[in-house]
Image 1 (spheres, rainbow, N blue to C red):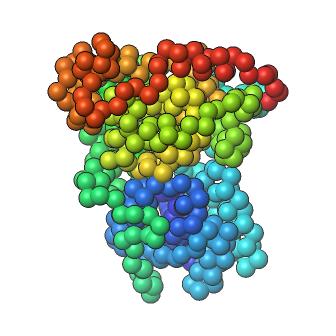
Image 2: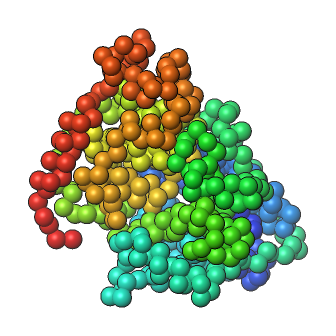
Image 3: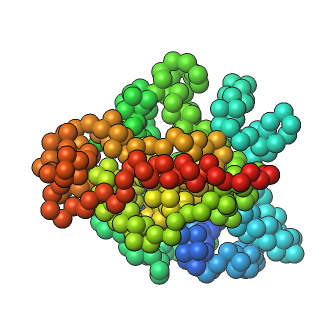
Length: 476
């Protein structure tokens, strides 16, 4: 009986649970569904769509070595997915479709509709755990609820990992050739502009490159991760997030690589490896939150009382923040990095998010949307979790009265102004003292053409604290 592997955010051959299961069950062909209307509704970035397409080219070559043809079909929205998949199954006499589970409300509704449609044709939809270490609903509190505090979630995950490490899926064997021709991968999709050439060099496609990057990080950099990860001018992070978001790497591959570098230890040994494993578990935590609290998939705050917060309607200030023209150098440098590369350093994601939601008191959903529209690693769970953490509206969020001072953050984590000079070249002539706050000291060092700070950091901080302090209390 023929099997169909439906690829989504799992664009790899190695350690792919659904692909391994499909090829073990019978002759397998593969599908990728292009859904531009749905991607636009989900604010997927042009850089991200381009990255998917480039990885599909690499994936098709890897599948060809296994004699698995990759077919490409088009459906404007996911509500057309059921018919598209059913039609392909009928065309090629497929008896079972294999997918790796996805967790947003739209993804869950899509898969339920596909399952029902296939059952009508006596075709089975088989779902597999793949993009997480633990199935949502399997890591719960003593009262059988989803965790709302990361440290408690991590403790249970550590206990589970000590008991049994999630194994990588076996590599599929080469199958006999099928009399089916694969389809050409489009170079672009209407509605998504082709990114500038530098993105190709910054983010090369293919799991071979992703695995090389993972190996280089765990061999050479992970030891210093805890000490270096907060400094945006240094190569202190793995920069693997685009590959994880697209499923070019699996979390199991990352976990095993980190453990190999730390003699199998989770909680002891090298602090850098332990810290990076914790970051993998943060990613896991936010995916579980999507399932346990589906309101966060519906543009709702995790903490219901914060829905009453009176955000400011300030379109000109929002635009200045988006374009990196706030007059706060570290914020502007970070926002320009995002526009140019499709990526932003994690420490700076928190800095710019707090500046928007606290100093400008602009709704976190505006920032969440802007990030998704530009991030090559855009991921609903992680992006929403990070924004709600910074805005103090989310699970395990930063207390509303702890507000990053972006100038202090800049002085601490970019002390010589190296990162600022790279992305805000109009400030390159300033020394390490003045580059963080060129409008200070009477504005004597403010270069022509660079804006004054759009807001006073102290008074805007007080405004945000007052807004949160006056929120009415409501039941969850």
